[in-house]
Structures are given as C-alpha cells and as structure tokens.
Amino acid sequence: MRILCLVLLSALVALASAAWGADIPFAAIRDAEVRLATIGYRLATANAALCDVQRPGTGLQLHTLAQYQPEAREQARRFFGFEGPIAVEGVAPDSPAAQAGVAADDTVVAINGAPLALPSTPTGTAMLIAAEQQLASLPSAAPLTLTLRRDGRERTLRIAPVPQCRSRFELLISDRWEASADGDMVQVASRFLELGDEAATVIVAHELAHNILRHPARLRAARAGSGVLAEFGRSARLYRRTEDEADVLSVYLLANAGFDPMAGARFWRGRGKSIGGGLLRGRSHASPAERARMMEDAARAVGATALRPATSPLIVTRDQPL
Image (cartoon, rainbow, N blue to C red; front, side, top):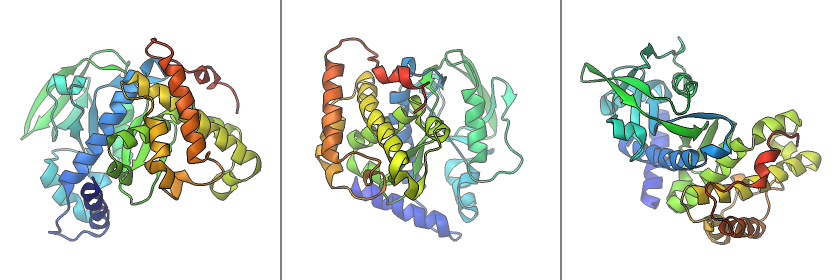
C-alpha cells in the first residue's frame, strides 16, 4: 500500500510538470481511482433507500482528457485510448456496466442515443461533470443505453442500472489527509488508500453521510463560517454537530453495504488516532477516542436490528435547519 501511495504522489508531480516523454504512472492512477469508485459504488447503491435524491448506479468510472495537464494529454490519449472527450477509466466489478460488457478505455459517444452534452470550453473537470450530470438526470432504475467507440468502431450496449445515492466519487492525488463532500461529490485524498481498503471505506462512508444528510447545503443556509472561522463559536458548534452526525450515520452505511460496522471505531482507536492535520484536527471534530465511542455505540444499535437497510434516526433531520 505504501508503494502505491508513493507512486501516486510521484504522479502528482509528474502530472503537474510533465515534459514530453516523461514516464507518468497512468496505470497506478487508474487503479487507485477505480478502487475508490468501487468502494463508493458499493456504499451508494447499498444505501440508496436512505437517499431521497438518487441516480442510476452503473459502476462506471469516467474520465476526460481535459482533467490532465496539457503537457500530459497526448500521453494520456495514447495510454487510455481516448477516441473522444469522455472515456471509461474503469468499471466496478459485478456492476451493471460490467455485466453489460462495458470495458476500460471505451470512449462514450452517446447516452440513450443523445450525444454527450458537453461544455464548449474543455477546462479541468467541467466536461466530466457535464457527462456525469447527464447520466445522473436519468431515472435511477430505468434501463439505459451507452454508445461506445473502440478502435474506430461503435457499439451500443443496454445497461440495467440499480438505484444509487446521487454522489460521485473523486480521488484527490495528495500527500495530505484530506477528504470532503459538497452535496454531489465525495473527494478523498490518495494518501488514505495507503491505509488499506477498510480505512478508506470508513472515510468514504463518513463523507457520503455528509451528502445524504445534506450537511453542505444546511451549513450554507445556517451561514456557518469556513476556514479559520469554522473553528470558533457558533460555526464550530455547527460543524461539530455535522461531523458527529456523519460519524454515526457512516456506521449504518457500512453495515448496509456488508462492511463491518465496527470498522469506524477500530480505525479511530488505531491508525486514525495518530494521524495529524487536515480533517483530523480542530474543534470541528471530536477527539479520536470520542469518535470511536460514538461509532461503537452506533454499531451496537445497528447490530441490535436485523433490518437491512438499517435506517438511522438522523435521516429524518436532513430537511431541518441546523
């Protein structure tokens, strides 16, 4: 795991300042992004019943040339076989897309017969977000078609999606302990993958819980401060409440997806206890010991019921002001 992380961090430097002919580890980047997307897909589909806003769950991990630095795009085009702006970076195992025969390096031409509605200026991830929104706008459980191109030939595949919480999952290539949720996206730093799948899943579940509980929108509505201001007074109390709630709900999300509900408590009593900086420090978060205790209590509550998906009482609060 540590070797993978170091490769990814090297990739960050390479992608930021690559010269023609540089050796950029695209394979390691793909493996990490698909690994994160697979964790997210499993959590978001298993907990769809807890989400009032859903999207089709396909298991697709898309990417675009525009998300790579200009100096690296020709290498990315060759490595991934791009034949258009948007392509399949990978597919979650046993997902609807995998079952339909979608494969890594297929270029996406159309969705339900409609060409991709992409912005005219291909900056950053704008094209990727537009393609994801086009998919997300479709009924969550209705069959859809993808027209794909590979080696100059097009084919159309029919996919039978499953309902999924409306969140997409993005890897941030970084050596910092960072993770965030904005209501539509969950972003997790590559460094967390160094700790193994269980730890990464705990972090993804926590951020997904923020989206399910509409914390980003509710914090904005409450005019909570950001940055340094989030560490003081009323803002600190609001952020602390949302962080505690996300910890508790994450235990339900883990259990519903077939993960060990004690994984969160185990993480905060183990490696999480010694990780400093980023999301693991400040008045907006409980101490590792407190987080472990809260999550252990939630795991006991989940274990006391055989109902799946188990639903936390917190779900009914998501429409209420903070």
